Image (tube, rainbow, N blue to C red; front, side, top):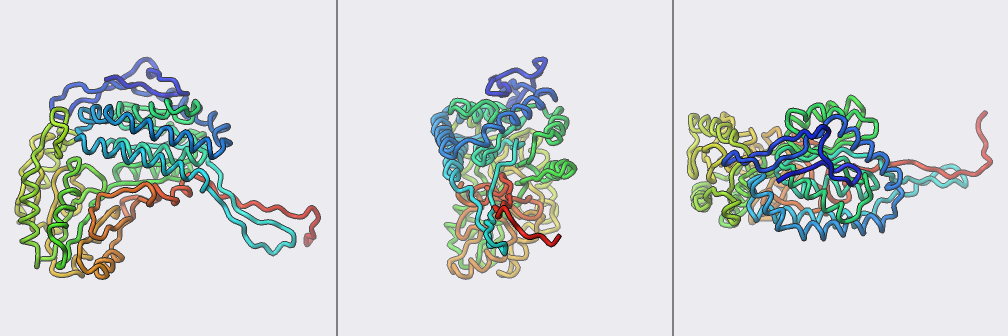
Length: 483
């Protein structure tokens, strides 16, 4: 597969024809040959977005809504193509790829519904005859940087919300999924968005720092949204702060699922399996910690392990129906194996799965994990999760909050009032009572606390991220001033 840049609605090669390769994590074959943007290409994309902003900011809400709804339909129609490309580019099962496209279409439709909800308010004033009010206006060109894991839906939200607010977007896709991200951009071009409203860039890993520096520092770029690791998020935040540019950051996670002593064990196991092993556990809100009351822990672990043992790693390009595919990179295996061995050396018990072989790893569960082990609060980003046994509800809350992260969480318990009380104590951006940690709805605000970032995608909360609030007064021609 080949992938180009999109600048001013034209698909073009990078300056001097520079490319980079995305290789399959199982056999190292070349999957995608993608254009590697230069500094000049990055500047052109920012300038294109700035030029388009002058007219797009004046576009009526009905036109923004029409184009976003059309893009949603086109995106959905491309589902088979996304399934095909994502299988080889990011090791996604048909389930995960299709789910991504479905969620992305919902994002475009939810964004379309916000077109007439970008509102201000009137404010009481002490000035006789004056009208005081606030209005919300677009901010300019937005730099959107997205990762490879929620490939389609994360791209959709980074594009649709800025655009519906009247901004334009420079969309910098992931080095790991350049073709998949190019397909998202194709849907918007086909929908009929004006030239420059969306520009798409891809670049090699080696050139990423200089490309990102160029874009963040460019005077046309007014805000940045980034989804990815906490490590890179800190770098983005620091660079943005230097230029006094506001960020929206959705970063890493170590999501806990708390299972109370009165939980429905079978239902909790279902949520644990789904949350832990969907897309090989490579989701920011994957269930990486099962915090289980010791009174029911043996029963829970037995059922959880039995279900996990049924999930065998396979190649989704050959078997689209598999659940656990290869990890994104062969280097993921040794990294996770180090954490696995550290835990075993310190007393953890392996109840399902085994060590990884390169990018291949079956669904794996470690029981009796403690805070002395690296895996206790370090992201694994693979098909491995841990069980931490606790004595009571108070300890369950303490362990759940004993994390540098605060993205998603869940709690299972039949006494809903008790479960809700636990939910209120969890220091996470989202908490799901009797549900999986892996959940997303376009109408609900999504984001984290602590090292998981700040700001919110989705829902009405996103309007604040991509608009400026302006105070406006209309006053009588003649006034009295103190001098």
